Amino acid sequence: MKFLFVLLLLLSSRTYAAPLCEVYGISDSPQALTCKFQRDKIDLACLDGSYFLDGELVEMAFHLEVEEGPTPLVFRTKSGDLTVTLNSGRHHEAVLSRHGKKLIGNCRF
Image 1 (cartoon, one colour):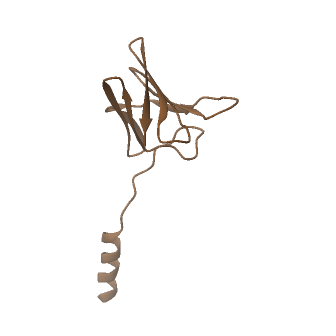
Image 2: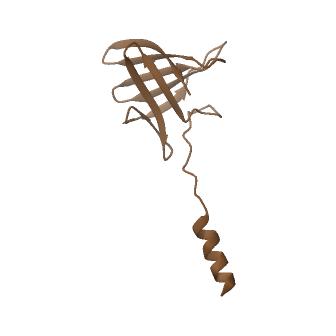
Image 3: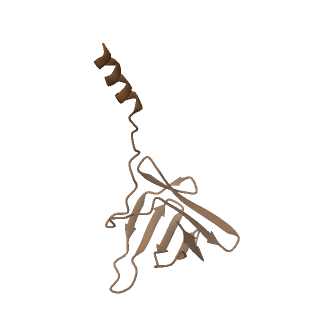
């Protein structure tokens, strides 16, 4: 009886981690970003293994091939793209393309 109690206690206290989000081709993908563009603020979040850009499902997340420098990450939704270039500092360059317009800003983890 004591064994059964301990077993139930162990199983009930076990925490299950939600699946992490991944950018295709990147081993250490960001799990959240906050990006600022002029007057707008955009949040990228990971929920149960899927990225969401301001609540809109990211259909595709990938990196752009570049010969030199940091690798730009692209988060594509139905309404547009967020491209983030991860730099070594705290601020990362970002371009938001939506409805035929491009906004330039920066993101933070």
